[in-house]
Figure 1: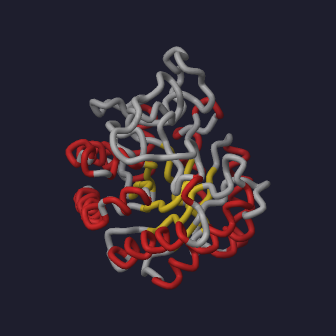
Figure 2: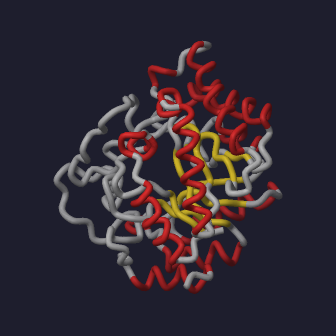
Length: 310
């Protein structure tokens, strides 16, 4: 399976993607077509608990619509429930405009840091996870469930453990047909052993050059489970399609790069780029301009050649 982390170019974050007032199936369908043109067969997509809380039935119906749009392109998504990265607090309604050149300036944690209180918030979050899994846990259009993106990031460390443990418990209680995972993203993370022990499929993040990518793969192989790199591609870190796709194929590792279409997330700029930074050269993430033109034709050809695109 080859794919990308997906958000439509018209959305700055998970809330803008999924809430009713900014739901944009036309752009989603068009840009999933760009992914399919490279031979991609999956996309990794972030959900958000606040949209579920406010628009439960409609939110679940939008996931269903997304799955329909993806399946038309031969794409089986991987959904992410929780996330410890970027802005600490989130609100529904109109989302902020992108800050010029700032990477992921509007991306938000899920749940917000102020909404992680035991037990009242956990009851709400349990209902969210179980409702999604009960609706789609037997759906052949879904590839996997990524229960928690980079738990402990943003200096949260062990503070994340109670929610991380419980989201696995909630998912086990439903026990969907599809595999469960949470990614190995930092070798220095105290939670790392829990992630590796409890995932049906081993997922990991790697934004490093080929040599370090291969070392990471070799480190994880003895666990004896399928491997999925759910985040890679950072051109200025020497993580690039032309060099890395052959490595994933050689080792039989599924791979999902960060980003598809240049858009409101500003992820063509690197982490830490200052506001007002010049046009990036090369782009950090992403593969397409909004009109569907590949950023680099050589990269597009590499995807098509190695992954069966047309």
